[in-house]
Length: 90
Image (cartoon, rainbow, N blue to C red; front, side, top):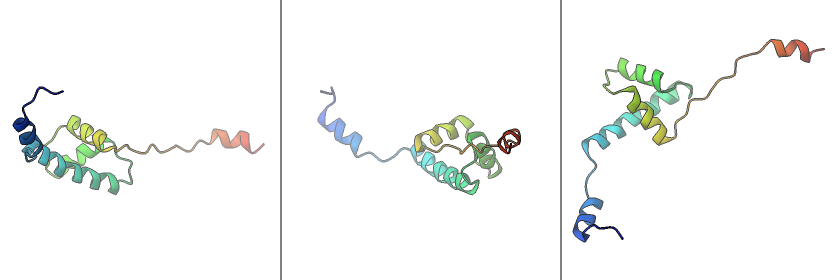
């Protein structure tokens, strides 16, 4: 059992989101828009740079935390390898 009073528990469950949580939600929407516009290739550092261009003030670590919490992961593109083609064609 938790050592919390009944009134304290219900006060906690009915509270409104804090200003920081509301700001996180707003930032996450912008992060998702930038992520989709980049065809899911931007990582946290590039998304942070885009947010800075839009005059958003937040740290790169905060962007990383929000992306991780939302399950947003950049796709890694494979580079074209010409060495493998030469041996494959023989």
